[in-house]
Image (tube, rainbow, N blue to C red):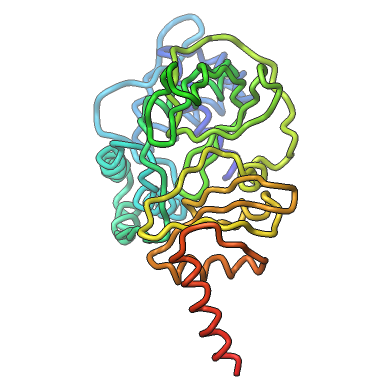
Length: 330
């Protein structure tokens, strides 16, 4: 049954990819006899797909248009997975809320009644966690440009925006010319999109925030894919201290020097933190919270020695927490 179902999906894909298909071509591609092909075509028709027969020496088939929408070939678990995924998708791309709602409605329209009921039973309300400070939603055109370059193995040329979202100006003291990189991976982590790429000019790998990328016109220039120095791309992004992160707009924001390696701090720091390399065993971290006591408490979770750099309110909060914990241990 599983083989037949997979073959039907493959047949449907072949019919949808080209207006007309000969019976012999379809049978060869599916690895079945013409008799089995005819049975599969009848199965698709029974499911509501308008497969039309073509006359001619070899005969053939095409997927007709019009008529009622056929049901989707998905099972109950897949229907629930689609409903949950669409309703809980993070809004990290600008202007897709309406598209997500329309996609869910459109999928429901082509579902059999029983599966539609399964999806309707999964009406969810996703509430944003105030601790999750995602990046500003990125433009669909930016995500499309970067994703296209990654998928097709084309060099990507872009301006890397300043942390406050401005295009760099040649008169700026920290001006950098447009970057030209070999894009390898798109990664989403903690509500942020990252591009993992190799910069030939610098002969170095880098992690770039996609919301800070202003892509130029496609280059169309192919490149030979390299092996990432860290086999696990997720670990590489999580442990990279220099990934273009900027401080989240917390009410309280403090900076400390921490006696831990930068890659360790980068992996476990809360979203919206900024990690800076000092030495192989020291890290400067800037992080925030709703209160100064909250910042001090988050720092305590690293179980490492710290030196408060700024501001004085954070120093006061550390002294207050130390006093409270001392009393708690008596």
